[in-house]
Length: 137
Image (cartoon, rainbow, N blue to C red):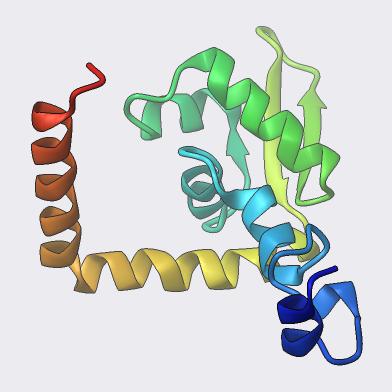
């Protein structure tokens, strides 16, 4: 460990060193930081949904990706999955208490995005300009 790291982390507790993989913010970002996980959490926040309902409600999300996101959320204890005996079979998904707890900061991020759309537009413009001017194309 470098001297700088020891100074920023006087107790040498890895949970207080942002560079450490066990840092709480890094751990939560590892759970929700992809394109679709926050969207699926947001969709499920209003209640139980059938797979097909989510597939129709979230534009641009493929069936395969929705399945992967839901499996990951289930594996993390954030979603429960219930297969209904019906013809054709239906699968319901619902946020667990842990998932509802995680939804709170995701909703805050979504609310921030709604209030700061011009900031997001500026970021998109910078990214587009960067890609147009990039030497590595």
